[in-house]
Length: 257
Ligand SMILES: NC(=O)C1=CN([C@@H]2O[C@H](COP(=O)(O)OP(=O)(O)OC[C@H]3O[C@@H](n4cnc5c(N)ncnc54)[C@H](O)[C@@H]3O)[C@@H](O)[C@H]2O)C=CC1
Ligand SMILES: CCCCCC(=O)/C=C/C=C\C/C=C\C/C=C\CCCC(=O)O
Image (cartoon, rainbow, N blue to C red):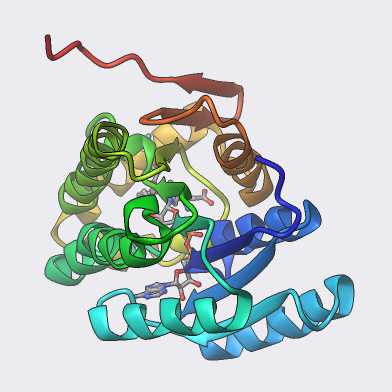
């Protein structure tokens, strides 16, 4: 897929991995709508992006992925402004084992809300142009991160939901590809104040820190490069791409047949 003239929506776009995804899509010619709850960070980023890429290729819309109403309004505004949606990156996520219901609501239900709301605009069977959705899971979506059971559960959910949507889309003729990235640790604010975020599992922080030392830490732009690959390579549908500092690997899952 060539990105020139395409419209992308990125959730959690104000900082970290979402910011890097936004930047790589813009650098390659797409128009990008940034959705986030952090208005201060998003507006400051938007100002920089408009200086670099022009005034008319970006839009920020305040949107909490916990709200179906806000997601629907943001997609409607995107279509009114840019004429459609071709690419959706469901990236917003938190780590908070104490506030675990909120973690499920943002990390897993947020992806489902946004994916279902996007169908109205992207599905070729309902007048959309088709396109591609890339969800941000984690390596914790493929195996257990012992200090974060609920975070782990949400990311396993995102991997399963993405793969099932890919199969449903292919079988139904939606014209939408669905892929998921599974990065190891990435240098973003998600890793800050980790003791507080681990809640009742804070005693397992040292064990996780040891894992960080073994695996190393990715930069957001290394992750965004993999998102770009999944967006542009039209052969990729239903793929889970594991990303770590030493490389990347497409996951082979057990066959269901
Ligand atoms: N940092 C890491 O080590 C890893 C992060 N991830 C995943 O990457 C994604 C992005 O995380 P990071 O960039 O690391 O974190 P971050 O904290 O730097 O950025 C997250 C962004 O999401 C936004 N956000 C949070 N709740 C939201 C909501 N309800 N609605 C809309 N926006 C919301 C935040 O305002 C922020 O801009 C998350 O899904 C996370 O689980 C995956 C693997 C590793
Ligand atoms: C192998 C699974 C990788 C999963 C990565 C992920 O999605 C998010 C992990 C976030 C936190 C993990 C919990 C504790 C980490 C402990 C210390 C982090 C310190 C980071 C540092 O800068 O040294």
